[in-house]
Length: 286
Image 1: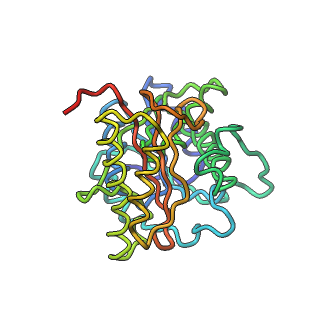
Image 2 (image 1 turned 135 degrees about the vertical axis):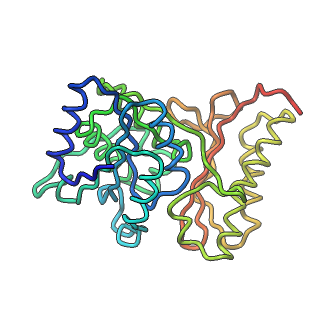
């Protein structure tokens, strides 16, 4: 695995790979890797001839009171994990490489970015879209891999790719969960033992919603109320939002339909966690 820190060298490497007809798979990350990230990397190594992983904690997607400085980082650990799964190139730029002095250009996907997580994290998706577009321009991937846990992010990036006619396919892979059901996240590192136990209210509430849907409930308000009640039983939790939305406009819906999304964000202590469930109402009942 070759480590690259400069935009100039990464662009030159991408051009050289493309000149040889190589397909490039790309997994953008903020590091402190876990099995969720590695599942994306493994899929890239299966589907592309060359895999590039970026590790960059993007300052543009953190608000002034958010955890940019505290966000977990361990490059040596990340290197060991990436070498084991067959990554060809690690792109690890510093902030000034990505945002040089005087930088002032940003990308927004209007309307979609203001919903769900965007309400409590203004500017977050502007930062995500900007850095991902920059990384796409630098790495020139054929396929980029993202996780379903960040469902709103994936939907927004797919819209950006479509609107800007980018020559990259976005593939979204299923949520990877720990043995206890909690969706893997680098921010899980912040949780103490009591908070970790309380955080299990998130996957449990989604499983309860899934059971309720399977027995025939189609009213979004009923499902949302059930999810909120389960989460509120844990005193260490505070709900940011629980919503059921369509996948095109992220607008709340009243009656469930295939291809809609149950999404939630919950504070557990001082840590904000997200999770979601893709709704399938035509499954065979058990």
